[in-house]
Amino acid sequence: MSWSFLSCRNPRFDKLIRMSKSAVVSRSTRVLAAITFACAGLDLVVLAGFHLIQPEIDPLTSATSEYVHGKAGAMSSVTSAAVGLGAVSLAVAVWRITVTVSARVGAGLLAVFGLAKLAQSFFPIDAGGATTTGLMHNLLGNLAFLVLPVAAILITPAAARACGRGQPGWWPRLAAWLIVLTSVLVLVGDGVGLFGLAQRIYLVSAALWTALVASWLWSARSRDQAAQNQVGDAGQNSGGQQAPQGPSGSGL
Image (cartoon, rainbow, N blue to C red):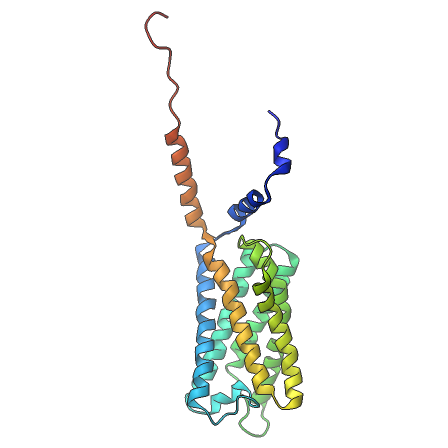
């Protein structure tokens, strides 16, 4: 029997094969994705809430870090730590499901971003004057700011393929490049007196991107589910086969 037909398979069939092989993640990886998704949600909710409970801070010009010195300011540090935890969780998950060098570099940079945000939660911004604590806050913030755009660009296509989605569509690519564009916007905004607005757009873009990649990981099949499906398929195949029957009658 000739197997030459394999060379002209339907592209949709090839995509299904890739999905069946790659879109399988461990249960612990899905847990990491859930942590990332929850942390991104907390970040967005707290950021929105600060605009209501601290209206005296101008969102156009003031950094979000300044919320730490006002009402419910402790939530600013908690949120920074949550963002860091979510980023590190996502970095570990991406490292697990990808094999390319670029994806692993992206995961490493994302981990740097997360660790910087975690550390930054212990160093609040200066309320006035200059202190060592404020200097550490700025250094860690700048480090996180610089590495995230690169991580997003490297991770997005690799994570999409690893989760069985093929090449990412326009929306995932836009989410990643939006981080890059808003990074530039932060630099420009700082020079024209709109740093606060630019930073908020950047932070929202970052939260949406991490939530998007986390949703891919969560929606991918778990290894346990894949194993159960294989067992079920095997059972159906064996159940559908009839045992060979010997010659009937006694005349032989």
